[in-house]
Image (cartoon, rainbow, N blue to C red; front, side, top):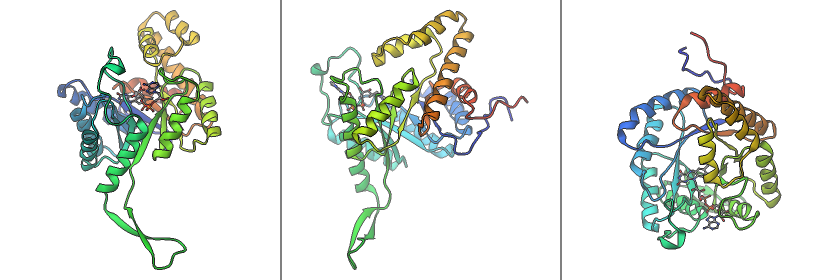
Length: 318
Ligand code: FAD
């Protein structure tokens, strides 16, 4: 085993990774090497982000088909609908289905940074829930049908798609930055479930009780789909600042101070890894159905988190 090769501690180890397509095709070979190492760790899936407005469609699809052909790990395609016509969104879904992609993360997506929503065309689909419905409808049209008996009605049969795609959606334990009230995010999640979503992945959060309390509120409101916590190793004060701009969360003082006290980059990285590993253990111990790690196209940090959390074996020293 090379020092880079992770050994899964358990074949069903409950983790997945998220990566993004490189800015240009020249970045693909380095990403494919990262994917090889991530895949060896045995994740449930690797998801690939999608630029809102379709800016990364070709590169996202290239990375997804690479994962499909070259690894045993199922790829999950993020898709956004902001700024898309109904026809364009349908065409992209068809293209991905034709390439063999059967798992999606359906998102609304944000308008380009610095653009006010009222100043641009937001598209025909108003929410992630509508994109869930569209993916479901397009796949049903593409899928071969089979006849199924109707229980209790002898001789009668109905046609059903032979397979269904899996559609995950986003959830926001600390609220979406544009939410108008604290129940809006639960209502949005209920709407996504009603539209056919099969699981949810959360925006990052900093403390386990934020996730656990959100799950409790969601369950009380009738959300039944699995809610997988998204965990981002925050390995520098600069990354923490960028993340807070994105999520609109207040600064977590414990993590912020620990990152600032550790002045060397290596020590800051160790703080971020330990924080993410503690978070992973706490949410799993609290009943989370797995963890989804934001990998930033770098395998070393997320694998260090998994080792520190005891989810993969320690490195074998060759
Ligand atoms: P929705 O579910 O439709 O909305 C989410 C919440 O925000 C709801 O509470 C809703 O009511 C509220 N809301 C939405 N819009 C408004 C508004 N205009 N005014 C008031 N409230 C509003 N983005 C990408 O571009 N590409 C990606 O690949 C990507 N991957 C992501 C993966 C994960 C796991 C997560 C958590 C987010 C990801 N995002 C990505 C970001 C996402 O597109 C944004 O957070 C977006 O603002 C909301 O998308 P949604 O699908 O949750 O939308």
